Length: 463
Image (cartoon, rainbow, N blue to C red; front, side, top):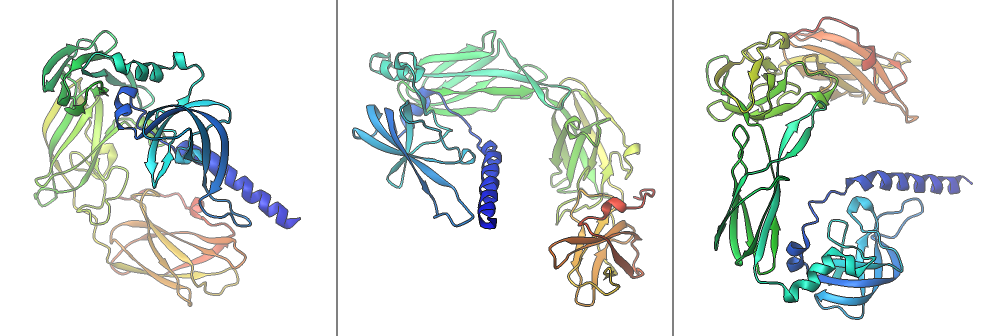
């Protein structure tokens, strides 16, 4: 009975994992048929006459791994590649791996890729069910190729993105935008009222496509495409209001602050609601220059290491706000209008936190009053709370470990341990004001849970 229950649980867990992972498949396309037709090795219309399943590795008693479906087709008509009257197509059995769901007895237009001699397809191709061949847009285009006039085409859609109240963007079509297509020949077109543009009858060859952004909006990138006869390229373009906050950042000694991590965030953002942050990020260059862009209209505060400590090797550890304070309440807000640039700001960083050099000896005692070996010690810098990896160490057999702290910083030191019965226990936090010489800390296991940070004693934050 226990074995059966274990297998059932394993299968349920596997099914749940697959259900969750099913959301992980992400596709860039599918691209239009006039584009992918020419690069698809195998393309056919077929009827599913059978479906088999194989595992990538043989399943064990309690674990069933991923695999593939082998889908047997009777070919109705082949358009590209060499296929016989019957063909087998492989596709992943998991949605997370972009597997395509075929059904026996149904008809499909299959866009296949060759892999190790096999034909494979997935959810990210234009493979789709065909319920009525006469009404299928892909088949109509393919069947019309023989009598189609010569020439290739470029088309697309141009839109502007406007920030919404939830921290995202609303899209709106941009009409009357000039689009230039240059290459073997040159075309100039304008987007219509829906933001669409189209250029037909282009000679085969390489082209660059550029569009002129409206005033106050960020420039569009230049796109390059290579077209063959009867092929096409779809080029969607988006832009945002192109506000800037520019300047230079310096260390306390006046030298350029190279490679520091900066964040500009909308003023008044709720720290507990990340979707309201509307933040833009930048790294300073070799001479300390920074440029936040593109920015939507609004009032911004900006800082070095706003929400997270500098990564290992960062030239600056602590957080500091423009124009040169460690307290967010003292930060100066910068207002940016639609497409406005605020230039030549000078941001002088306060002196950095001291480098880690202050050893702290920590002893962990268990519920029975004896030292605890292999307990994990975590020292969290109050400046960062839980948003930075803490200083850590593991106790030796005598229940002792040493962590090295930054003098002048405030830490909360906690401990947890994995017990022999597979449960956990933790010791409540002890506050430490790090100095060059620190008194030893004693941590006593007090709760049969893995995290005692919830028992932290309230106190005024120090910078």
